[in-house]
Image 1 (cartoon, rainbow, N blue to C red):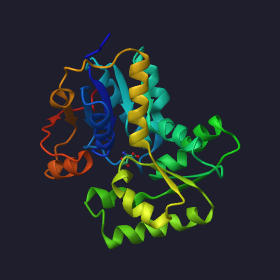
Image 2: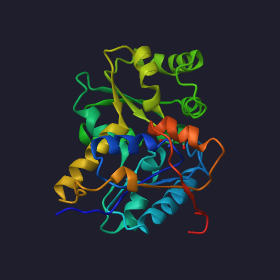
Image 3: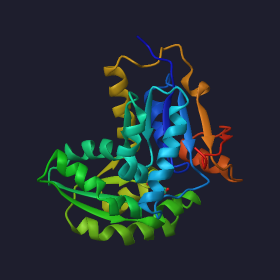
Image 4: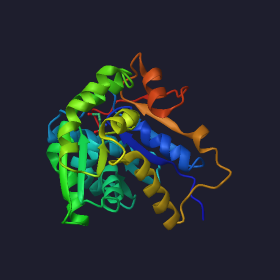
Length: 272
Ligand code: DGL
């Protein structure tokens, strides 16, 4: 049986569109309902209490939109608030990008040494280490917060010399630890893939959480027999919501999604 309801996706801002891009690529018939909390982004330096509160408000909004599953596309929200979100989601399956990335890395590390980069709050939460070690306790996890990287992507300095130097500055210690897998634990980092790969070398495999989350969604929907029918124009019917429509929205959204021309609806979440 097919299920035409949309897949809900939320992020602290527009970075989660990297997950939407992967969903569109793997499942073009699925309709997406995306919420970017652009008014309160970034979450990476917020307190845990604020990240929990914002994440639950985001989830609550998505859950009012008749979605069939919810993806927490923000690594920070996924690291800190996944349990809170599951508690309010009832029967709706909820997945976070953290666990998807960990599952992919665990089966790929031969050296049993995995690096993780992300926002300050994500790395501080230890969610990646906890998740990896619950899958294989013999794996060593090396986390490194890289707060400047998301800002570089936000302003479009993706292939700049500054991006290259910043990546080198953050990553040289991780490379020295002997890792053979590096999880890109932030919604923005898939855009820096080339610079990061160029810095760490080809012996270190990059794990793109957005890609693996989309794959996991596909597996779950197939197992539940809840994919959309092949006649649905999922991309055309998808809807986008933001909490603030900034003047650079179109440019930034285009960068993350790889296509432009999405017109978002602005909503207020403060009182939900
Ligand atoms: N979406 C966040 C993440 O994936 C990055 C931006 C932020 O700090 O809000 O961790």
